[in-house]
Image 1 (cartoon, helix red, strand yellow):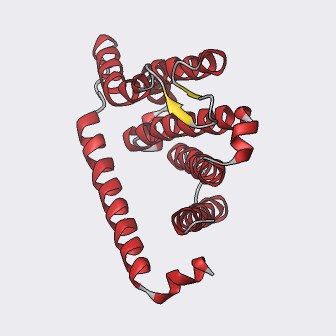
Image 2 (cartoon, rainbow, N blue to C red; image 1 turned 30 degrees about the vertical axis):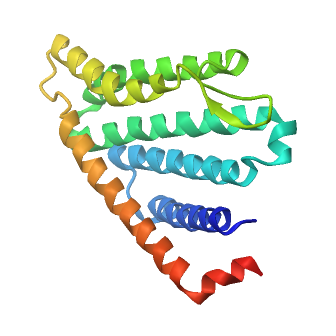
Length: 214
């Protein structure tokens, strides 16, 4: 295993352990409010995302993947859908008020947020026989195809447009502030990427990294 693949796998394992500990803690010490259950749903999706990302990193470009194309379709389908579901739960979590708000407001938000998620799920199912989003080429290598960008369009563009439009049609007072949500998530992602980059740089400069070459 090369140093980049080993470090990436190690990072994913640490991340899964940390998120898993948070989820276990939430089951034993947190309450059972609607907002806390939604957050646990987001944590479950994050673990699924990290696991499929780790396994994909281990088999990408290997003989196993070349002989078992189903592994790519399974891992990538779960990977992308987990990311979309995580965003779905985070949206519900950030917009959920206190328990006095009632379940009707949550049901409205779920109905507004589901269309892009359903479209994405259908596309991922259709992709399995058609390869319109991604596929394995004749050399056993993963490749993104023409409609791949549609996945990001659904998340980045359609989510705020569809949710906001349906909210206005239904005259819901609590219309999602998707710009604020995206900016907040972008800040957290930027911090995480910077931390990962700094850790990788420190590792590359230390003697410990040379252990991977032995």
